[in-house]
Amino acid sequence: MKTASITANLNYLEDRPAVSVLLKTDRTKEVRILMKKGQQMKEHKAPFPIVVSLFEGAIDFGVAGEKMQLKKGDLIALDASVPHDLFCTEDAIIRLTIATADSVDRVKNVAN
Image (cartoon, helix red, strand yellow):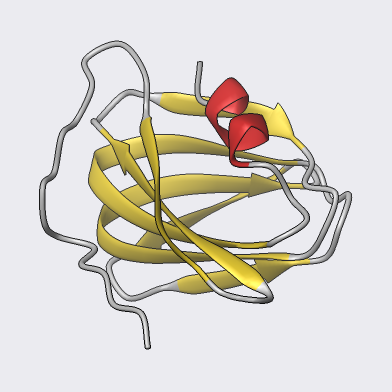
């Protein structure tokens, strides 16, 4: 059994989203992304399917040129290689589920 808290030790960064691994399983990595209002993650693609869960706050989530607002409690799943971007409209706690074969460094690089 593995446990983690999405709300413990929140350390927002002023200049970019903060990315950290909460826990790993045989199949997934659960990643927390902390974003302050006005921060963004420019358009990028994931090499494997992902699930984005908004735990707190609000973001504009862009997919294929269409923007949708995600708010607390919303989830979105994307297939591999789908271009997407995020813009934070209200300080946010985001849970990102990625495949174990995916790289957390890839996510951190997008957050810079």
